[in-house]
Length: 363
View 1 (cartoon, rainbow, N blue to C red):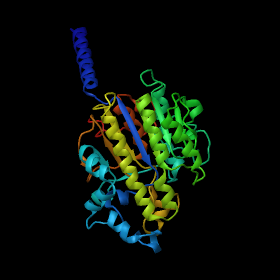
View 2 (cartoon, helix red, strand yellow):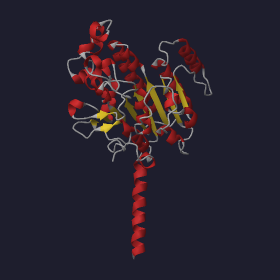
View 3 (tube, helix red, strand yellow):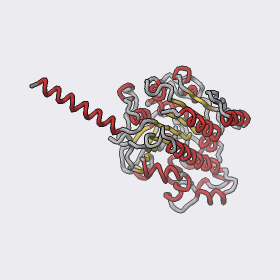
View 4 (cartoon, rainbow, N blue to C red):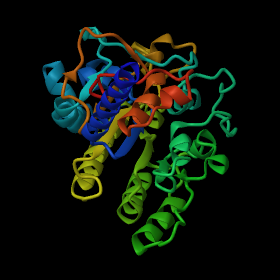
């Protein structure tokens, strides 16, 4: 009798596990990050305090207000980020509006890029990662971890505007494509479109270590059409560069363009049988920025820059919309959540990583 009950219990457990696996529909994950886009603009839209020459370096205040100024928070944020608010916030979940009791923050204490990307991609902060220097990451990212699994090997890719991404992913050890900065994409086939993008990218150097997002984005689109990766990282950088330059007009334009890029990528994926109805999307920054005059800055000396926002959408994520009056979430939870969407248990493999966000996984 005892053995019979054990047998029945094992069968029931296996049935539940198989049922859960059958219900999960995500087969691919696309993760887009836009560097240093503040939660304030995401949830409130353009800030009138910076829409002039004196406080925001704005060249044409009237044109900027026509493009992005509206009377209410809801209308302003929709004007700035129409895909995030018109699609992701309706079909997915969005955290980080502190006015509505929803917190999202980084835990690394540094509040700048490399520590933020490491925390995001490995699932935990590391005090050794304390600069933006091109030092190979000692930590294994969730992308590298997934690439080590048979179902994902050779189906992982990362594209970034910033030339530090090869170090962040530790490309030599990780073993998957990381195309970043001004480096040409040389993976065969190098189509005429890719060859032209490679040439224009190298001929248009404005920032030392960071290419314009447009070069990254369109190169990535061509790669996806050809190679159809299952796990894709896209790291945009214009938002951070223009904020540091004190150009609020160009910062807003970069945010609006990032939103448009996410829309274009998502719609392309939904037109392809390999992705349609079985792809999840994550969209978030690597850090926040300061309040008031400190909107240009971030880092340890700008405590408010720890505050970020997170958004998720996909076939396994319930449409709970903008989260209000809920428990806070952290940057360190993204890695395990990303893996969980694919049915992989990063939490068990890397116990020190942040726990997956259960609501995103439909639990």
